[in-house]
Image 1 (cartoon, helix red, strand yellow):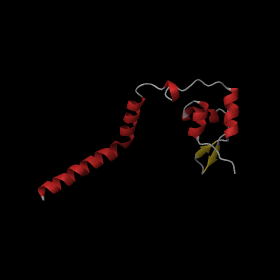
Image 2 (cartoon, rainbow, N blue to C red):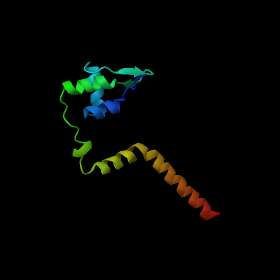
Image 3 (tube, one colour):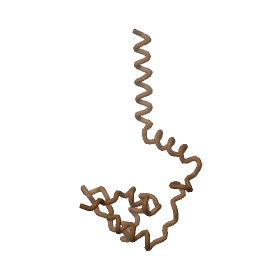
Length: 103
């Protein structure tokens, strides 16, 4: 059984973002296979064939040309997507400290 690539793996191979891979599927330039009705998968040889045919511009936010603030952007993204958990854990810690001090 052959291993199919995820959207992220196809994007990495092509040097583009995952959204652009999905756009290529919508335009019919790349064949994507849906697993479970929602997860797109790709045959590696088809991705490689497309890469050989089309010259993609390198993704400026990945690889050697990464911006110097990429770690800062990653930290911002982390806090943006996990803010509820961070605030909840902080409030819980304050509550526990208050109960310990009061007891």
